[in-house]
Length: 94
Image 1 (cartoon, rainbow, N blue to C red):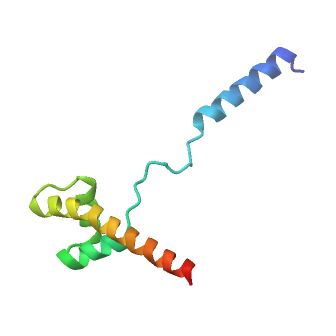
Image 2 (image 1 turned 90 degrees about the vertical axis):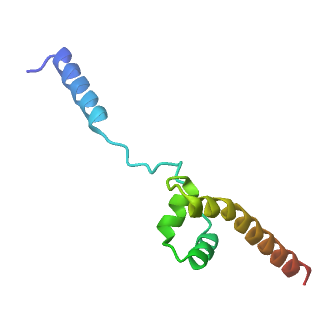
Image 3 (image 1 turned 120 degrees about the horizontal axis):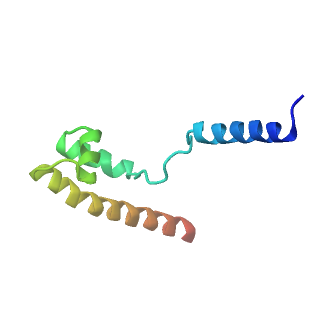
């Protein structure tokens, strides 16, 4: 019925169609993760939404307050990391 050439041709068409129609379902690796405790501290300090704080840190907002937020965020993260390291060190020494 079908010659080998026809079967190979059909197989190639199906294979190419399936590959070009597939869409990636893998999540992007370049999502930036923020320190939730630092975000919550800035939310309490400024009374703004967490979304606005994240946008300010990311640089998508312009103004005086977003600049302050962008400057304070790394300082808060460093302080939180130092505090965590201190707690772990004290726990190990017990």
